[in-house]
Amino acid sequence: MVSFWSRLRERLINFYPPLLGAGIRSRRIDDLTIHVEMKLTAFNRNIVGVHFGGSLYAMCDPWFMLIMMRALGSDYIVWDKAASIKFISPGRGTVNAAFQITRERIDEIRTAADRGEKIEPVFSVDVLDGQGQIVAQVEKLLYVRRKK
Image (tube, rainbow, N blue to C red; front, top):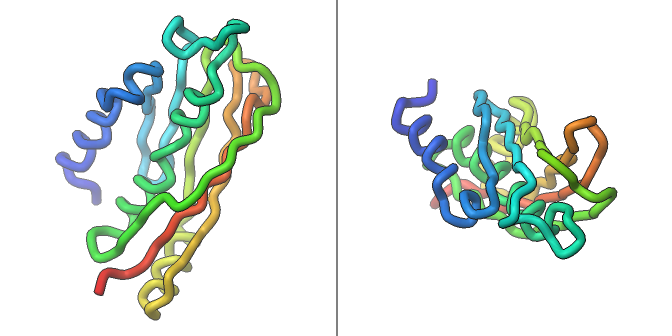
């Protein structure tokens, strides 16, 4: 069960300046899924009038780490370690992405970390436009281990 304070903290991330400035909003936060959207604005538009690639990446940056931190709790270290983004088509209008980690995957990672291993799981997400077309594909590499 997630506390009121955890939920409040998750909502306050929408006011984190790099996300706020780019117009990135977490719209729905479920147990292991976060839905994020970004409208095309003057602050995140590039010179040719579509979503700036840096804003598309920023839209995807923190969410897998936050889901994993929330799922594992304070006895574990979770860091972002690496990322890559592949731009597929121009992002026009509002774009969105759903970041999800399954309970089974979290349990696998927890079990390995509890054995003293450092784990480097990879997660991926598609950024979609309003018609459901892929705008970008992002991979995130996390670092996870149990605290000593």
